[in-house]
Length: 236
Length: 112
Image 1 (cartoon, rainbow over the protein chains, first blue to last red):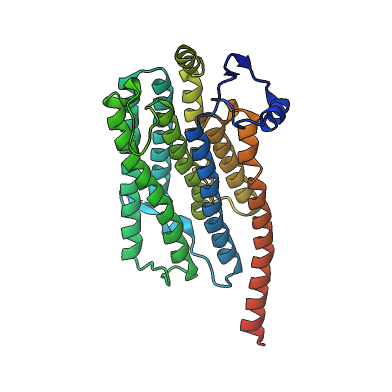
Image 2 (cartoon, each protein chain N blue to C red; image 1 turned 90 degrees about the vertical axis):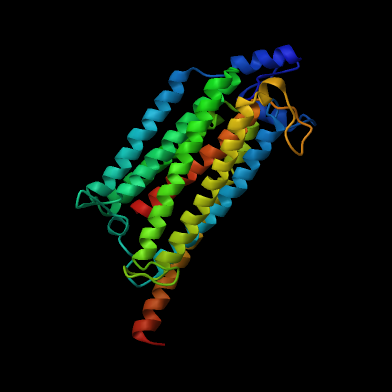
């Protein structure tokens, strides 16, 4: 949501606008808060890290002559005595999407300076993230009980375990870090730091609701990565 | 300046309807991609459906939840063009994976 006006001047849109922004001998991302630009660049680099993991997984799976474990059986969960394929994973997906939706609304209410709605929605997002991590911990312990290790597993190709723990573990770490920050920002919103423009730690920057959007970018990214993990690791 | 900043922040928020729509769509698309596994589609149909739903979901999240649709092109292009490097990497590793599989099968079973 860049500001289309800078100091009263209307900025040109589209590719002409891009050429002018880039060649203006000034700041390139006009109307974009520096924190937001930095978060985007961090997310871009994080995209490459996750891509490397998923590409390694693709290559590992494509190059093994041993049968790959069938994810829809490995990740099945018994519901009322009937094994339902991917039940837990589907629930995790829905929980994460729900938390992404509440985060998007929190950003909206933040910009409208609706402190309470913003705070409660961030709290809901944090609780969704916590639920997700809890379900993932359950999934990990279930698979470890069944004998899945990074070097072997009873279902098929030995590489399965290492890719599973590496990829979902790295994603789970991102979710956990996100949850911690969501709780911190929830406190900051309720305490009114963004209404009063109170300074945060390690920064002279005055508190502003744009910080909620920056946190939101990170949180949506975590959801975005899960979309790819869900497709490639669990469904493929 | 402070005045205009507040004003612009207010004008740049979007109606709640758009977020709820995207939210609903994401639910429906996730449900569909789950159905791909539920009905055990196989082969070309399976992976084309998985990829279709995946890219649709990713696009919706990036465009609307992460506001890329409303950002200036200078930012959007800086973020999206590097992704083509990932596509190249995938293509390279597909070829490499096939070669590794071939050489494993050849030397494990046929012998060196």
